[in-house]
Length: 512
Image 1 (cartoon, one colour):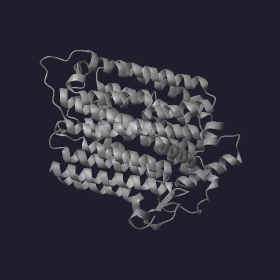
Image 2 (cartoon, helix red, strand yellow):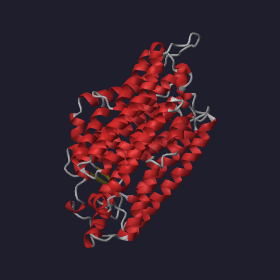
Image 3 (tube, one colour):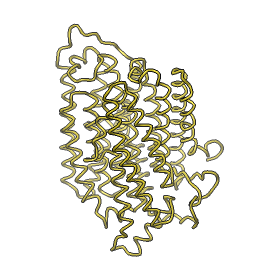
Image 4 (tube, rainbow, N blue to C red):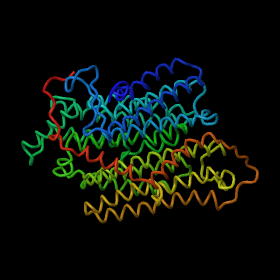
């Protein structure tokens, strides 16, 4: 890359990071919203530019901050996988800001709108920075930037339960972040570096010296990082914070977080297992996939989906559905193969656009009927036909019906399971998808097969449906024409699985 494009990796983080404090000083909410939307759109353009640039390169793009080469300096690394993630995250963030209609903005306490947009962009900057940084300590720094702003975003809901949900999220999120920091500290103690590529080389050297034994400090570092990221990702049974946070946050925040936060954490879990510690060691010697991650994933798939059936509101139903969908993501990783990682990346993208689109639909429902309680949705198919149809479209995407992105990702997951000879697991994936049919059909039955109330007025919010239709349309487009995305995911998985030793080792030296 040359010219301005050469600075895309750092601009990806700098644009929202510098705009956020500016918005905190601007009290005029319309101006703040316009600047926030402009910043998010610019970030999305940069993200897709990085996808194109990463596809044109054999090796990941490296950007040296301050002109200092690694491992002395900090670098940003844009691989095909990280470019894929940041493009999705930045696009959903921009569409989430489009969701800020007159009705949904009422969910944010009056006088705090400018702070809401500032926190929104800070969260976006943290997520994007975490996805592309090549420095382990900066992973923690960006993790905390996104987490602290997320706690604020959830608490800005003007419902009383938003504060308790944010506090619960803060406590568990802080524990998760602390675990990640301890793991990174132990990694530094063992390797003497914080550069990701350097860590991978030195960990591999330690494993090659004594392949049949385990370095205790390295093992403890791995455990701390996995538990911390598992908490942030809401892997069962560490998911207790997610339902409350998604259900009580403002509608735009729920859509934003559902499509971005857990996806970036999942990508970090991919990097930790495959790159930091090496897939051969983690899934071979430690048997982390089959002995730990696979049973927890299967439990999460079923328990999250079954819990979704009994929820009284759409938001809580979709929140528990996300717990089940996280189970699919981690199940794909548990195979420890390129095919599994490819399926995980495909499901990351599929679930991001589908679930964010569904939360946008819920925002339109709240604007229309004044509630997201399921018992208030009687006859919604007649009262708000486009909104009801959009929800059904997103629901079949969650199930994995052919013609949607969910089918493409679940088909890839089944292929990965068969390739790894986990035939029973493949059957459980199909069975858990049938459970998803139950909670989606529950909503369809209420919307289409129950009579609408006679005296209840319905308000139509067409603007709220714009991001919903864009996201759900992208899901269908992905489902009908999957070839390019599948190829991108396959190349990204292959790049992640390159042995650290196949890349040239970095020069020795201290770390700044």
